[in-house]
Structures are given as C-alpha cells and as structure tokens.
Image 1 (cartoon, one colour):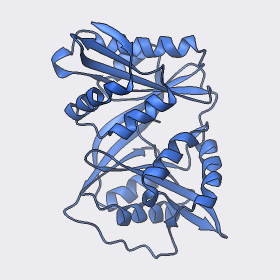
Image 2: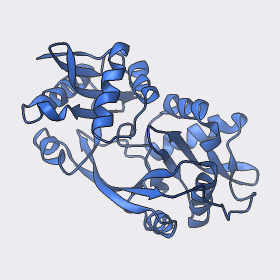
Image 3: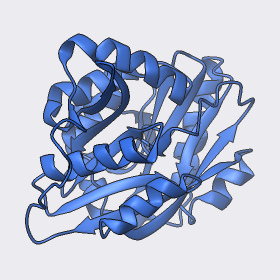
Length: 284
C-alpha cells in the first residue's frame, strides 16, 4: 500500500470509486478539489491501482473541509479509510488550520468521533425521481436567474451565511451551470439565492439560502423548472422545517441522513437560519 498526494491523472480512478459507491460527483468536482487544494488531496494505491481517496479544501484558513473518503469495496475493513482520514487531518494540522468540518454518514460517524469530531447539526438527503420535466407554477417575477453584475453581492451574502468565503466554488458552479443559479430580488436587489450543479446521474440543488418560506419556495420551484433531469438531489438542513415541508410537498423523499461534524473551535459557524440546503457533503 502507498499513500500519496492525488494528481489530475487520478481523476478517472476517483470517478470509478464514487461511481461504485453510487455518489454523484463528476470529473469537474474532482478538479475543484485539485485546483483549490493541490497538496491536500490523497489516494491510497495498491499495485498502482487507486483503492481509496480523501480530499481537503480550506476556506480562508478559518476552517477546512474533509470529503470524498472513499474505499474500493474489495479493500474495505483494512483500515484504509482511517489512514486516509488521519492523513487529511495531519495535513490540515501541519498548515495550522484551527477547525475541520465534514458531513458524516451513519457508517462513518463513529470513526470521526474517535478522532475528536463532534456533532454540529443534522442534514437529510432527499431525492426526487420524476418521469419527465415538471411544470413550474411559480410566477416569472418570483424567481429569476442570477445576473453577472450581482454575483459578487451574492458571494458576500454567502460568506455571512456559510461562515467563510467560498466564492471560488460558487463561481465555478455559476460558470458551469449558470441556468441553475437563481435569486429572489427585493427592491431590485438579490436577497436570497440558490445554485445547482449537474452531477453524474442527478442535478443537485445547493446551496439554497432563503429568508422566508415564500422565497424558499420560489427558488425550489425555479430549480425544478430549470432542471430537465429525472433525478434531483437536495441535502436539506433538518432544523429548517419549512424547507423540509416544501421538498416533501414536491414529492422529494428521504434518502439518507448526514451529520455535520466539527473538530476544533467552531468560531465561524455561519448563520444556520437561512440555510435550506448545503452545497453538498463533499464541499460543505
């Protein structure tokens, strides 16, 4: 076994692992990690075959995210996931990142707890499977596409809600799928927003941030109208009852629970109130 830094040449191997696991990431998602954390993504290989991965990404050095802890099913129960996770933690410790966060599955949660991670809040992944494109009932004025001229304003709002600047990620999402970037305006200015990305088998809504039930519904209905995929995914913040109810009313069904966990001081928790859905467990 050899644990080393991930490179661009490992992207097909990463895609293989997340496809086997039934995860929705694309090559573009793996490149986002490598572009923003070229020394902080790792693979385990055996006989030149990548059998495990782990990624990190830092947000202004306020806190960092650990994600994509994947192990080939044929190599599980050998401690590979633990080694990769410890390597990610050691890397972030080396760079004096004070706080680490991740979104844990029930299977991974006990391992993270052993390494000092504690629960911050709960998330529920919901999925919608539909035979064809749904018809939106939202008035055209309720929700509209994000304009290039107002994107920086939305980035500033997101920094306050998320707790750190992640505009480099949101800019990437906007460049790749601008039609899925939506806003609700008040007095001509954006007040709420949502982004989306086109995954391997589903369109993913997130982040989805709204200050009222009406604006949350407008953004959700707008996303449903803009997406033509049969499968849609949303990682809903469970404490946001309105968002959960809106998703249920649109026939989304629970798929799996996630737990947001944190290691170290949580000095930059952001504002959970407007959070309807996170960007995704791999990014935060």
